Length: 289
Image (tube, helix red, strand yellow):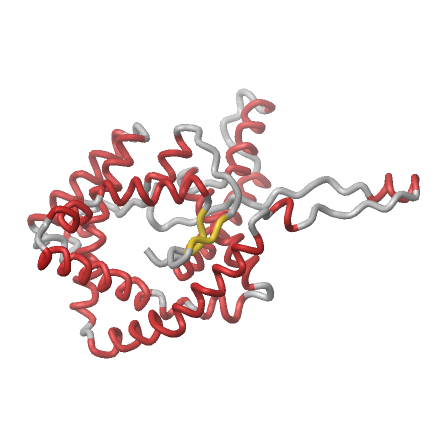
């Protein structure tokens, strides 16, 4: 799955029974938020907690970091941690049986770790080795593990039970985890410091997209939730939404002999991809790593 990418688990809507209500005179209500989002109380409280932490600590520190850090240093730090992340990406490629992508990401990791000076320079980008976004939560989905309900985690932001387990899996794929756990006190402190820098660096990189949430949403909670669900769906389905895939499967079943989807279906796919890309930027802003 390409990193630049974002696409949708769209909320499930029940069929309207308006006509039946009119005929029978019975009163029926729409599904309550507690049914479609059973942990909404916890989620809203945790989101508020995360927002307060961001406003009180992360955002001010990120602003200071942005002010004192030269652009080339900031880019180098971003590239360094991105290169370390490519270790887990390559492993998840393999676990998802994406052999061609495994070779690409392994090559990317090798090139940037050597010629790119431990990843501080993204040389792989210059030789057409694109950055991909794979994590253990996506791997679990490929293996058939259901996502569960939407869940907001303290400090980590939007998630679900499957992706929460995926966070643990990705930590096990990160060599810094073992260096920190089994190294000396000084090494562990250095690793903790580097992780703090990574968090601040990510937060600083998202300063320019923050207005998407603050100015582009009426209901902030729903906007963040839907952005997260759409983005995960986009990543899991390699840049397509699950609805697009179902649409194409239905189309191939009813139009045998015609390999070109209808213009209407294609337009639907293009629109979904565009919306998902916007959702991806929002998710990155609301999910500290």
